[in-house]
Length: 236
Ligand code: HEM
Image (cartoon, rainbow, N blue to C red; front, side, top):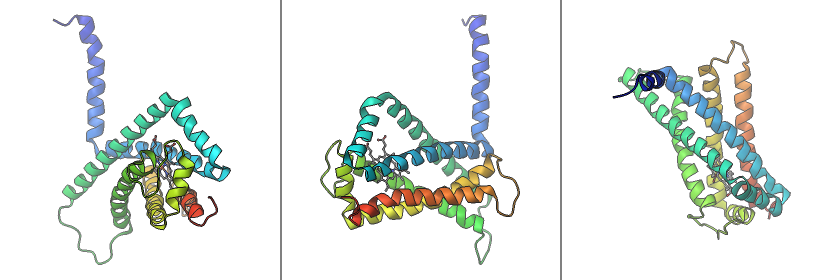
């Protein structure tokens, strides 16, 4: 039989679990989970972009940075990977469930000749999100594990692997196209997460629009620069 101390110790935990469950079951709860996990992923993506730009400082710098991540702060890297993985999974599950709730609430579509801007944005978010997910799977198999090898892959030589691959025009094309999907997803995502988290104030030119546009252009440009510079022979 459980002791009184054990029962009283269990109660707050059970109450917290019920609260977390109720939060997750609610539509706003799922939207908040999407917004918070989205912010975590944006922060990671910005750091990743800054890391990649070190290619312009030469092979020693980029390969040294990669070695530092893998060997010097190994545990922190695995913690970041775990946080990122949980964020991606929660973001996708919440997105899929919100899509289903949306469809169930409106089984017959409105008869509209011209689709609403909001509908176009949310549809592009869904398909853009699927495209990005497929890109990330391809990207890890391509650049991290070297399973997909359009060019020779040398473990630890990140610089050489990038230069070898982005000299191939269609590899660069896949990446630049994926970065357009990334930019659009960030643009709409930042916009709607600011609204979900209640940070927006009514204005004809809201800050959230400027932040969303700036971030989308920064990420698209910052990431695309690397494959384009290699294809054009600026980095060799
Ligand atoms: C032109 C664009 C990109 C380039 C050149 C690039 C380059 C790289 C490189 C070189 C690595 C391996 C680093 C290492 O082994 O030290 C890597 C890993 C990775 N990249 Fe990218 N990346 C790009 C875009 C993206 C985007 C847009 C995302 C996500 C939205 C992404 C997600 C990842 C992930 C999840 C990993 C694995 C990280 C890990 O092993 O911990 N990358 N990328």
